[in-house]
Length: 197
Length: 197
DNA sequence: TCCTTCGTGAGAGTGCTCTCTCATGACGAT
DNA sequence: ATCGTCATGAGAGAGCACTCTCACGAAGGA
Image (cartoon, rainbow over all chains, first blue to last red; front, side, top):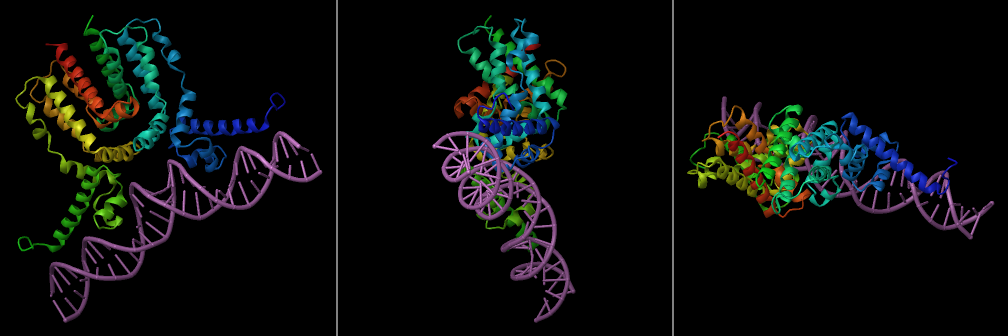
């Protein structure tokens, strides 16, 4: 308490914010259902205060998930040396989907609240885009616009929705779902780069 | 009322059920937000009665959407003569996504309630599977298991989630979203059938 | 030291999903 | 015509995502 007495008020706010995010992160990691009342209770904070710091549950979940998120460069470190777009994309997809799986309940809650309020979708982390961009960064456009189209296609396979479609609707096990999404992303990438060599 | 006086009680139930489904269908088509209280009010029925006929909103939406659904054979009639799997799948995908778009609010509501309760996902219509199966029915497995894998992959591109990912997250217009999903489905199909000719 | 500011808590309120109970009233069977 | 069954309505109630108001109390500036 002796170091930064600069603005006790600001420190207090920072502490409160951190407590909320931490509680949310812990809940998300525990697999329990993540709701605003639960987070607030775990953070020893009133629900009203939680809403003062985050306009909605999505924003809070976003911050909590991003806090655990290593970032695209670190995530793709194992394939940093690879110059094979298929390998890089496949790895990125597997990485993201395992992350989704590890925070399944939280991601489900986020989709549930944003799907009915598309305007709020901007509050979603958009990790897939950073990951896809990074995975494809070293490569030039095989043909004009092909890379942009590929990225859009990959957004369908490399995302939380893909995981839930494969598990909930197709009835796949989590492992099989990840494998299927990875294979799909690889196929799309292969096709995009094979089209015009 | 003279034809089937068989069981007035049964008729009454059928009428009530129809009123609920019709109200739900009209709401869904109008683009308005579909909620149980709204449907009940529009059907001149109490909310409790609506829940007596349908255990949850998803089941009701499912029945209302299926009622408008022409069925896979009729939907694919325009490409019935085609023996090109790519063309057939592309058409099916476009067809489904336009259907989703026409009932966007209803489909969003359905996803929102099922995403947090995966166990209830069985209540979803699963139109994509019927459509994909029908589109690929004429074709033999290019290689062992390839067709099954392709169907799983297509579930990612040929579904409501794909449409919402492309519009909400990628920021595409509805038209562009449909086009992108169609192209993605086509690419996946092409790849599956080209792998082993 | 006083006093203003501002972070916070508590609670009500809206609308939603869904469950349960109780009363009513119309219908079919006798 | 009467009686019992059963479809229905009305309402409470739990839990959720929010929104808003009001009052408390501590931190900071004068």
